Figure (cartoon, rainbow, N blue to C red):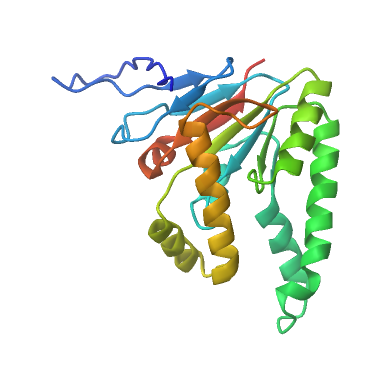
Length: 219
């Protein structure tokens, strides 16, 4: 597995015996970049090609939406945003399961429209589903870009705590299903075996995600 090259940052204060924190990491090549276990001394920004698509995935509660809201200033499609809009319109006593199919349709319609724009795009979706990856990979290729994966590697306990903090969780069955799928994907990426259609993958843990301030596109 390739480790990401660190770019030294300059600051007004010299701190002896401390490695300088990397500021920007450019991701042009089809490789795996592992930013975990760096104690937060990882890039502050990840930059991709101007027509690329980036899928952020991980366990429910791992912090995907939080990371996107903080670091993505350009076009982004978050399935959680779609659900929140529908939740605000529905009667409070109506179970989410009743209108979940409509939320999924609305999410994918919005994603389809965003892909047609040709701009660099960050997507929060279940990147563990092969049909979604295939669709996004084809869309990225058609417009001259590449599909990239940003995988948040957190423990199940951290993810469950994240669900409690946001006041919304998934069923035990759904969580176990996600845990199995994300686990398989993580192990494959760690071996350097990228799923078909993905040009590169970046692995981040909680500290690495915490210092990211920009996920953007060049050009």
